[in-house]
Structures are given as C-alpha cells and as structure tokens.
Image (cartoon, rainbow, N blue to C red; front, side, top):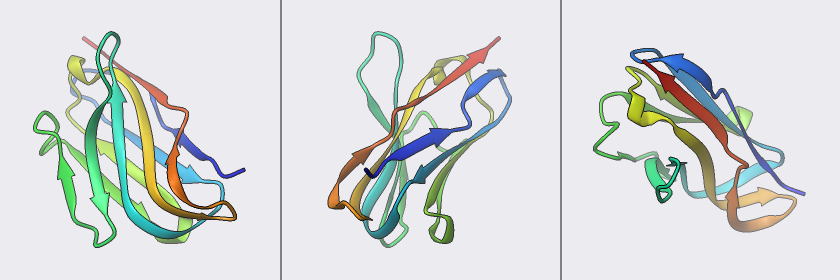
Length: 120
C-alpha cells in the first residue's frame, strides 16, 4: 500500500526552525501538485504551501518569506523548511500529493500528519 509519511515535527521555541519531510513509500511517477496543509486545534485544515509539476510554488500569506517548499525527485521526498516560527504556526501538518505513485497509480494521497508545536 502506498503511503506518504511525514517526519520532522516537534517542539520548538518561537523564532526557531524546523524542516518537515514527506516521503512516499513508492515511486512517484507523476506530480500534478503537492502541498503542505495544516490544521490547528478547532480550526479548518488550510493550505500552507503548494508546488506544481512545473515547480511553481504558492504560499499562504501567513507564511510567505518564512516557509519554503521543495521536492527531491531522487528521494521521492517533499520538504517544508520553516523558519522564524511563530506561536500561530502550531498545528498538525499534513502532506498531500495529487499525482501517481507506483504501484498504486494515480490518486490523491495524504500523510498521517506530524505535530508542530511552537512555544514562547
């Protein structure tokens, strides 16, 4: 079964940095779009950063200039570098792939989420 597995979350002080990783258990053969979403307690899930197959990126206004999304094709892994973290960045972060992963094929894939907690 194809999975997306996030890692890199944890507890960090405000102003600190974390790098999240999202690794696919199979081989990604097509990317329509990939993205990082987050869901804070009591709030709806929101798109934090997205990247398309031509590698164009978009960011939520709240993270522009602080977060960077990248993909390493060789490692089948997507990253989210988060700098200058703020208390309001505290949430569960999920990765998403709209594309194709062998052996399962085309689909929309989600990871299980990783907790990011920013303390004062």
